[in-house]
Each structure stands twice: as C-alpha cells, then as structure tokens.
Length: 110
Image (cartoon, rainbow, N blue to C red; front, side, top):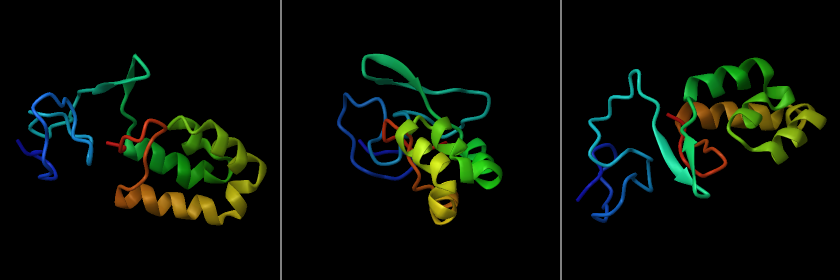
C-alpha cells in the first residue's frame, strides 16, 4: 500500500502517512474538511499552512505562528528575542512556504 500524495510505503493499519500526513485512502481534497489525528490520546487538528504563513509574515517577530502550531516554548523565545533577532522568523517563513514546517505533534501543515 502506498500513499496517494507522496508515494511512500504504508502499513495496512495506518490512518495517516508518516511522511506527508495525508490520510490513508484520501483523494487529497482538503476543501471544507478539517482532518484530525490522535495525539496523546486526544483528537488533534491539523493546522492550516496559510494561516501560519500570514501570522509569520505579519507577526513573526512576536512568534504568533509558533503559538498557532502549538510550539509554546519557542513561541516565547521568539517573543522575547524579536523573532530570534529576525533571522528565525525569516527562516520559519521560508520553511512554511516550502512545506517543511511542522506543528508540535510533528505533522505537516495543510
């Protein structure tokens, strides 16, 4: 069994791809659907890439995008150091655009 989005190998009991986060059996259509996954025995929602992007673009120096994805510790660091002196906010902006930025549970932003 292979992921429909990235093509990586999947075991039969997996609900989400461990590489790209795509739900198994999904057609890749995310319109009007909020996907959730299990994280620490609770439902955990996926975070939106574009919300994180605009938070980082306009409020990256205070770490708003990091608070949004649940990275509270580094959000406080960004808040106290003005986005890790601006360089960290710029790096995060690029990571969000290329799709490498992850939320606190390690899932990609969709």
